Length: 225
Image (cartoon, rainbow, N blue to C red):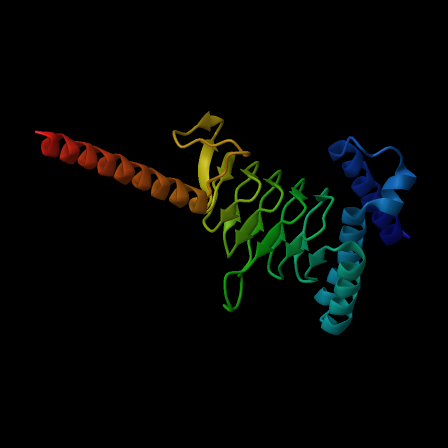
């Protein structure tokens, strides 16, 4: 009875978290029936329970069914804390050795993955109150510190200290302990190396064309003399 009471208490806490994080949530029935992120978390708890008992086949079956219905792939070995919120959720991938603290939020398209075939701890640790924005990739055995934020579309390959904001490819810290650093970027103005290179080539071509015009003009003047 105590176990069932704790289970329903955790489920209610999950529903309350949705209301805290999503202003679009209107009522509990809607949240319970239509929020794929919530379904994914509940299914993961079942899969993780099988995983801890070394019933890996059943754990993976539940995980795959979860992925089929929600579009969210959480390996049954991942450790997830309380009040975890997945907003929208389609395309979210969470690896086997990933550890997620309490009050963490991730958005659609986020990958918490590995970088190779190494054994042991190979996925990120996300500490309490962290936020991983849309499409961000956090890869390898790294730590995203408490209360830190990863900007949309960023690729993070190194540890992020607490109370920081990281954006870009590769990710770089633009805010630390509330102080903006010199290389600050808006989330809507993330680095685009291809566009930067094209712009550099265009500038070189423009300079060359200007030089050609100058030389032609100089040659015409000399011929006139």
